[in-house]
Length: 156
Image 1 (cartoon, rainbow, N blue to C red):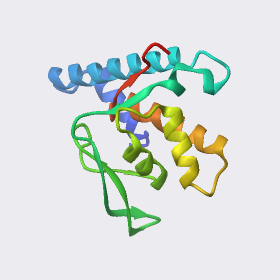
Image 2 (image 1 turned 135 degrees about the horizontal axis):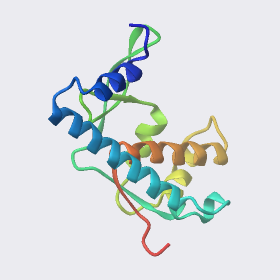
Image 3 (image 1 turned 135 degrees about the vertical axis):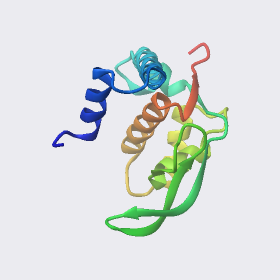
Image 4 (image 1 turned 30 degrees about the horizontal axis):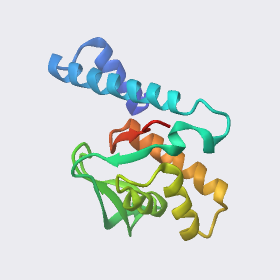
């Protein structure tokens, strides 16, 4: 109807045209994502990335999350790619090779900084700073959406 999908969905929810249980569920998800975003903001309080709590945090994947290699649509045709599968991912969520590799390194022991260092040794198209920035951006997105269940900042 001329509105972007998110705008349309928001308009329907705001008018209360959806079942109450659905609206409550959407609001709960939104609230959880807002809380996760606030926690991330608290973890990035230093101007030097390497000194933030986020850089030193240990990510942990949500239960059942895994990456599979499957056909995905790219530029109008099917190609082999990676998808994130598991609870909370209705259908498969396509991801880049870098994100797939990053997810394979999340083992509950390595910090975000250590994961970025490992990726830097395996990614030849970008310098260490670009890989670190991409790693942190991916961790933040995956944490907010619940794919990464926890960022254990320890005492850091």
